[in-house]
Length: 226
Length: 226
DNA sequence: ATTTATTTTTAGATTAATCTAAACTTTAGT
DNA sequence: ACTAAAGTTTAGATTAATCTAAAAATAAAT
Figure (tube, rainbow over the protein chains, first blue to last red):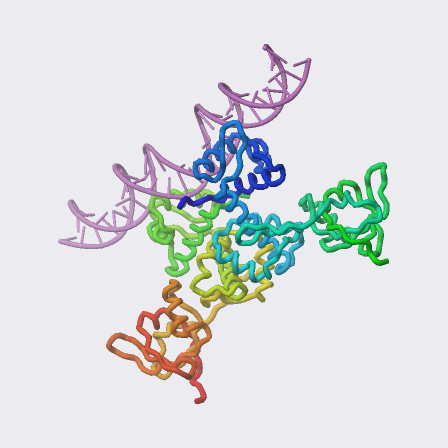
């Protein structure tokens, strides 16, 4: 019946994130960077998490989550993303604002609260950034998404997510009307700087940089009738 | 720009509560009891709060909140009660369940969140227990409530609040259908144990103990037509 | 008014989380 | 293979919050 602190939860989340994207043991330095703290602090914390059986830890090698640790981390992700949906859909926050507040809300401890919230929101499968929300058993729904940059000229996709989550990027997308659900067709690709000309929702055309097209996820759409 | 911890917030809330009900300086022991901790810990904390100018503190005398401290405490009460309304009205929690979860939610730091929540809930003036919710400026709305036990036989009142907030009491009230808004008429008072016979919503009659009638607040109603 | 009881404060320790600086492993480069 | 660089761990300190036990101040009681 060991209880777990908010700080420990944040470490688990960081480890989860690193292992998820790189798909290998998380290094001390990577965790330190993710947590914005020193490697020494991480080293200390890893010992504590190992003693609580939340991570597999051998000195000098990286760490991975145990089953318990992984469950806890997944539940945090579930809570975080459900709160994000709440903030956006019910309280009219914008998608660049929700993360920061959800960082606090995700630590509220009440399984019943989360199940009720999930129900209140209509069991959403994705958060405001298009990231999947694991269900109560920890299962993520999968979607066949690719970077917009991988579409060839003439191909069409629907925006379903973002790679980068920074507020500035999200605000840029809002300004450009490149929100989730938007239909984009690649009209032309410039070899020079890899920028692309897009047709947005079969209407106006805009030019976006390579950085933007690499950070936008789309679901490929079959060629439109027109 | 001193930041304030959750623990400090809880102490402020405790002091606020004691000063509010007793209307005089809060003693170390009273705070210790309210916080379920030792007098020594309280003594330590009082020094810290005094250094941060959140309380007026002189050794051996009690403490009172400074203006800043009082504002912080009132805002905590506002957050707590708004979250309680949310839990009850939107997530279908019962009034005996909401307090515990709101104890956590009240520490979420985001003024914007609270204003949006307030708006989402339709600017409620009272929480699920009938306690007033201070507005953004810290003003509480006032209501002329009296204990049910002070009604004379023949008099009628509408239940608007509770003195005691324990889950067992609240569950008892639910079972007896003595919820907020219920109309109760005192039919008879037994001198022997101060229990009273009530007519509930002009329908069935029930007997309640003195303890119950002392812990229920009503607003006196003019004699009914029938 | 002096003793007793209660309340409050201090002293000294403990735990979680953090830091900097130093020591130690591992990896990489020539 | 050896040295340099990078990454990781330990050592020693610090801060917030807590505890128990002891000392000091106030209040109550004979």
